[in-house]
Image (cartoon, rainbow, N blue to C red; front, side):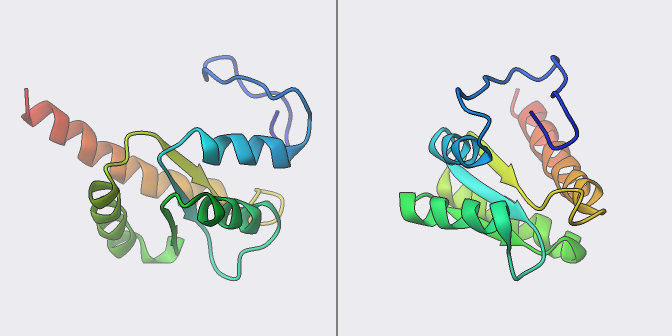
Length: 124
């Protein structure tokens, strides 16, 4: 469940037993190698919880400022390679509290996925 309703079936997700976002956040941190947070500081609400849970679990956690996209992408790539990230938890503020959250995260993820996609293709 997302704040705007059910998540599309095309995403292979498993619902938690409770409708509590805290449980979902704990599981996302637990089930990933690292957490990338796309947000402006100070972090609040569930975004701040995500950072606290990642740090408490001893897993790598990186917060990138969305307005620093070129640098953020280079920092993300270096950080992911340094930590051998295979499964990445991506987090940030809700759309209702930050109208640009989706587009900010999408821009960074598109750049990362394009890089890793071309990187994997060149290794074949």
